Amino acid sequence: MEARARSGSRSPAAGSSSKEADAKPEAEADAEAEAKIKAEVVDEFPECIICSEELSSETDIVKLPCKCTSAYCHGCWDRCLAASVSAHGQALCPSCRCSMRVDYDPVQGRLLFERSSSGTGSDGPEMAADNWRSGLYEKARPRQIMLLQLFGAQAELARAGPDEGSSSVAEDVLQQPEEPRCVCGSRLMRVSVRERIHALVAEHSESAPPSLIEIYVRYPPIICDICDQRMQGSHVWSCENRGRTILHADAYDVCEACFAHHTTGTDIEVVSREEPILHGN
Image (cartoon, rainbow, N blue to C red; front, side):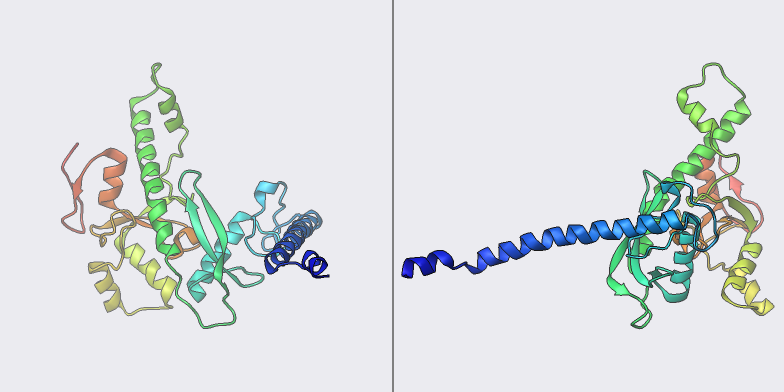
């Protein structure tokens, strides 16, 4: 009887193993069911839930890190997260309000999303966005520098004219856009500091007294996103997309000195609001 009781009993470890084995198929089944639901929803509604753009391929649809079954195009999803960061200090899914972290792949030049451990942002007080925001700027910086270098190389080749001996690298450079591009894909526009200040004030308030505008123009509260230095000179290269992307939910600005250095290899010293002094190559 004693031997039979021992053989028929199960140890706690054995019971735990059995439960884990049972839970694994259940988790896999849940994941498959969730994927099936999402696929069915996309098939039934092949349009972005915001702009109604037809999502004709799998690459057009954002792979959501949450359990939402809504379909979003990349542009609308990006703008929604940027608006959420500006309004609430964190990136929230526009459907389920799930909080998420955003990362950037500088090699592929694309954003990556994952669900945040903080859960949803609707149940608690507003939180400041964690370190992933500063991490985005850091990871985007090398790619922005590369884009400026390619733009400068393209301009140099265009001035030199066609060359039978041009290398494959030169051919790749010639395929770059004719205007400098921000890392987000939009254009970098050269604007005066005064124009940039007016745009900055308009984004944060309805109006500002002229005296405040003049103080901001004289001491611009703008930081170059490449060198991290306060803006100098009379002009700045600013992304036309401003804060409408999660990649730079505030804005993206490049000073004249960094732009010249990375596009032409020319170092300039900005000594006034008028024109910079060229030192040459």
